[in-house]
Image 1 (cartoon, rainbow, N blue to C red):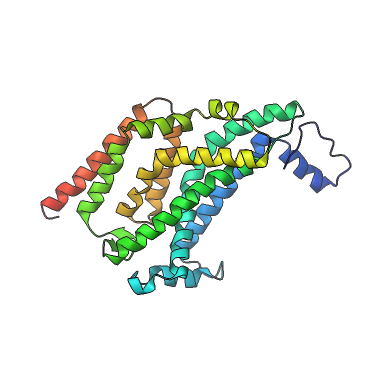
Image 2 (cartoon, one colour; image 1 turned 135 degrees about the vertical axis):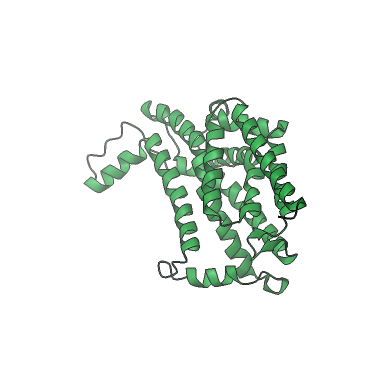
Length: 281
């Protein structure tokens, strides 16, 4: 989908002209992309939490299916799909805001190209590639949730029943904050401009691949913190919002200080959970 900044929309209807002007401004389109996709994720999560099945006809059956006991006999394609869609909504809600700096960086370069009347590709294509990576993660997380539920490690299929496991998840996520791989991926997320500038393309397939690669960097940066949801409750909206804010700030603040602080907090939280378990609370 290509537009140029100086395109003449006078021959179009008012509505079509306005739409053309939006697509000719990559930064505005990028902002619309982030808000729309993240908003859809939060909206779906809100429906699941509130149980407002009448808003979308399929939600009530989904909730009944999702909340029924997760056992081997219930490992159906429908069940796996439902849990995967739930995780997909969570990743949209949590990860798209943290991807905003990356998408806006791409849009800034595209905006410069548009002013030179060069061909540009919609930021939605970039976001689509990024989202594919996290949807694959969502599918893997859904399988993990069903496995954990099968072996009774998740209460009701959503919250850890083992405080030692919960503590270990927090400590593992905290230790990962100090790993070299984490920092290598985080650097790519914090400074996406060199990557886009070196790999710039005006082909939709190429931009989609850029989104895939940035999604992999983001996954390498954030997967451990996403697993914290198993410890606090897969549908815990407060933790979802909190982690989304933390991951967004982490990608916006250069350096390692904030990342180190979060790692310490996660480790101390995990240690605290394990300590309360050992004294019988």
